[in-house]
Length: 177
Figure (tube, rainbow, N blue to C red):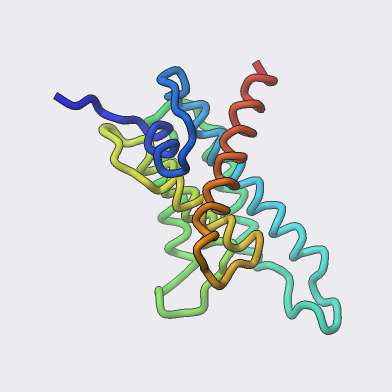
């Protein structure tokens, strides 16, 4: 009988990070996703600070993206697997309300946040079969660095960035305890 893998172990396999069974904690997983959300918040803040500069940008980020960001941060403050999954489902419902149909224009900030919400919602299910955390990291990395073309090096760069995000999450937890 094969043992069930948790979300941190699945993430580690996806990003080629050495896994230790002591890493399989909800706190590490949530801290990793929280780091991704922080990056999205940074991107949003940067977009806000350069909004309406002639010749540089068109518009500031949407108010909806700010509302979604706030709700995602509240979700990450929840404690307990069930509470996190429930809040993630509620945030997904809100995102579907503000995003509208899939064929309309995409708010990339909301889309990245939705990926992070999916990581929590489906990553904490038991048994876990979710690869959403690695996909969310790839999504945020792509927008953070403006990557639109992919080559042989792209997967290695994505994994390297995700490994640094996981290391940062572990270190933040170690320092805060």
